[in-house]
Amino acid sequence: MQVPFWDERIETASRGDLEALQLERLKKVVDSAFKTPFYKKRLAKAGMSSSDDIKSLEDLKKIPFTTKDDLRKSFPKGLLACDMDEVNRIHSSSGTTGIPTVIYFSGEDVDTWTDLVARCVVCTGASKKDVFQNMMTYGLFTGGLGLHYGAEKAGMTVIPVSSGNTLRQVQIMQDFQTSVVHATPSYMLHIRTVLDENDISLKQLNLQKAFIGAEPHSENVRKKIEELYNIDAYNSYGLSEMNGPGLAFECVHKAGMHFWEDGYIVEIVDPETDENLEDGEPGEVIVTNLIRHATPLMRYRTRDLASILPGQCECGRTHRRLSRIKGRTDDMLIINGVNVFPSQIEEVIMKIPEVGTNYQICLDKQGALDRLTVQVEIYSKMFTGSAGELENLRHRIVEKLKGTITIKPLVKLHEPGFLPVYEGKAKRVIDERPKD
Ligand code: ADP
Ligand code: K
Ligand code: ZN
Image (tube, rainbow, N blue to C red):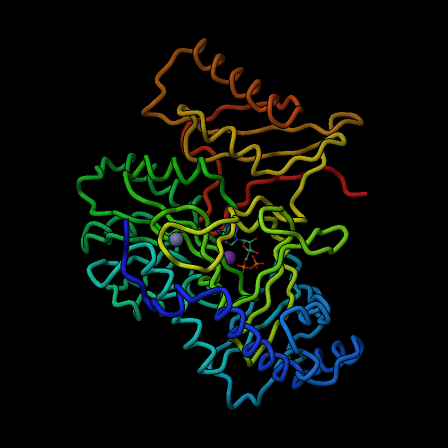
């Protein structure tokens, strides 16, 4: 399976050429960084005085890590490297703690980002023949506008519908025979139940592909989405600090996400020791943005856990691939002393065909002990069983979970539509244990 390249020369560049380009761009980003109050201080403290301190890519390690907290403390202008006259776009996130962070883009920054997103779209085989319905939220969140401009540049027919109002989404899908959508995986699952409720068959739609991202999801959720719609679903990874979508995207082979190495430098480090890890070893993803100069960010700690997949992709693109995001350094649950990632739970339950499109992980205390309750919606069309069969299914889920996470959870089964619906990022974990 071969699809056209967006920019063949750069997408198939040799490692040597890619690294030469990275070094050249890194030096320019360091120059920009020295123009910000934050990095001026931070880099001086690390013993650097100019981009001349970067002589090889190895010298990247002289640069200290930057964290989300650094961004918060630098709000609003501590990481601004140019005059506001040069700033073309602002994206900002309020975050869960309420302390905002901001990213500034110059005109050129927006253009280079857009070009990378166009590259992503094209590597899935999407083209100007496609009608693209962008269901990600438009606004300060980067998922809407980021994909919008890239898809437009790639020539797709873009419907900028934004998130929410599922019935309207479904109507638009029929009216314009949408062939590609962009949504969170949880929202994709939800839309399917709305189709069922309204007796809309897949034949009335023309859906062929979905770009899914913005939240962690397991391979089994991808498979579920692909089966429920009979489409191809492609994983998209990005974060506002690295512009947004366009950082890493799956090609037609769906064998990990190509990380665009002319635009970014990726490192994987052991989150405890900060030691750099080899390809294949899982750790925290650290990214240096080589293509944004209004807000330079180097060695940014994403807190996301993943690995670089060794080997080459069949598509011929030389840019290395990132594995699925396994979790975040801060989303690991400790349940009665056992470490559990929400993704492990998802992986197990989503493999069971009778399980529907929504679930929730709840934690509370029962006496001194933690109690894990997994709430699961069942898939109505697949399950029309008796009380005994339901109990059987429940028991099966308990045993399967226990086999993987070693803890025996309480499992509650629900009708489709029982659990809360999220149109953007889903909140899967409700932790009601007292914090001490
Ligand atoms: P916020 O930190 O406010 O949520 P973003 O919207 O930029 O900011 O979210 C970025 C985060 O979303 C990433 O760091 C990652 O944890 C998660 N994420 C984005 N895409 C994916 C994906 N494809 N798979 C797993 N997690 C993802
Ligand atoms: K996101
Ligand atoms: Zn590929």
